[in-house]
Length: 256
Image (tube, rainbow, N blue to C red):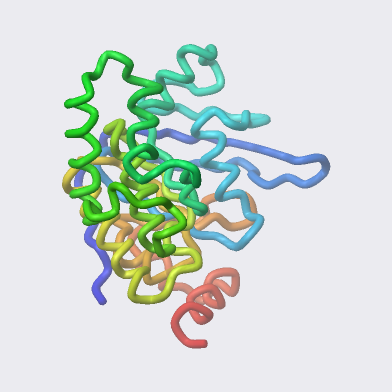
């Protein structure tokens, strides 16, 4: 298994500067700095409770930082009004750990829902084409009339990604995309993340504990340690260290 190569672009689509966030007396982020470059998959690693999911909630405006700035696609998120924030969120795709499908809807209806809600001028034919295009992209055309309960965990993950892609986002945020999946399905999801990057030209942040996923999909890795991004670079650069905050993370994934 080879690590993914770096991207060469330096155009920034997300810029995080000196971000701090506390919950009561517990400070999660302590001056975090991070850039996401156009067209890259950036993997964010860190132990549970280090603020990885908090960070993507701040990026999307679901939480507000206590200090620092977060700019997404040239807009400072905390300064946006409700209408501007909604418009920005339509340019960002979220792939949730739970897949977040509606159990009472067929797969077709799950995929149609964000289009009907956000793009009211589309014809039925345009909606059908969009649904079929994203189902084809994730390799699950045969599930179009099935219910979520009839799908495997890996298939639900794929449909969740398809539903995100249907609005053609510029940025993808993946929260633990391989969590709870068997090793073969994990490899399929990793390949899909890379295919999405190539086919849809997305810029992505991938939050994961899975170092196989990190190595296969990450053009760049950033490790969140003690509330700050203290190690960033290629997979090999990040783990070429004797830092005892980092080496157990590697050993757990690849030795135990």
